[in-house]
Length: 498
Image (tube, rainbow, N blue to C red):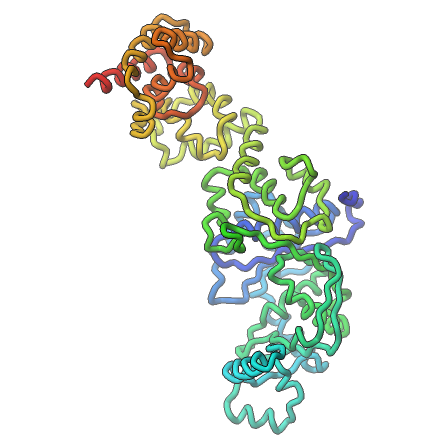
């Protein structure tokens, strides 16, 4: 059971979300942002939004803007960070380079770091030898104790050096909030680089330094970063000694999100792109509801809930360590539930971007607001994603129904012309003030030809809407109107008889 929310301002909980602005945001990244956000909101804590943009070759301003826009669309607000500010600004790592350079210098002066002159070729050769001998193949500490003469010789050769952190010769144990107690032995956590030969700081330095200076209390991140945690804990200990950090944060590593073939969902997988869900018309709350289920459960018997309900119950220790499988069909089903939860006005407004889009299949002047408002309640019960609205209501705004060959072939069988002829007669004489009367007319036409309603209405639906599936037929006919309905049935008859 989730712990009760703490009183505002008393928890001291500080978490961070620190993506790199490379490419389009993906759902795994959003899941990480969501869990950090929900944890902060549950505990009345602080969410720090920080940008990892120290890799100039891969980072882009466009991706940075997309990150901000995506979080705004999802409704995941932040308390400190870009466009918000805060006491630890700046929040873009590219603007904090002097901070990292100063900490790296202090680590070297205190003996916690050293210059390493090994070339990539030398490192790979020694790793291969270690693997062949059955030893751990990490860095072997060759440059840990260089003499001044050895350093001078390397420099005379023109060798560049990186800065490595000196790992302590001890076992590191910590309690992961998701996975429980974990232990790493020294031979499996060798000295690691923190500054490139160019002087540019590495992730292994900048993230712990920023976490320390920004007072982060809980680091909730993906399982792929678990192996770096013992390194960061050792670095934290050194930063505490230097007065840069106050304490080591608690860590929680979120399970992998798996895609097709039981492989980790990657940026290359189409279903991983957040933009896909925005373009298809997922509701932010529907998408967040589903993503929260990738490793966490609201309750044993409830999968659909609001973001506010999630915040109330969210507990990081309730996250499952096992990989979570991304199921697009379930994501769609949950989104459909959220669409049905909207009030009628909110639903109509949510559909507006598709109804009035330049790419809509009808001319803007042919869009009928009254017809849309009349059909909207019936459409709301049928949509999975908002973009489905176009195919469901296009029969109202197009001069003629769409020509879908598969639907026509499926519905227009032998005898369909006779059925349509009778249906037209019955509908001409029907009371168009109620869908029930129109249903009775089609039912009577079917009975005249020995057909049940399901078989009788299929040719009528395709004649009027162009498709075999769609919104409730008789409500659709009423909104379309008597004259247009009869004209379309007449056109279908002419096509069948030609």
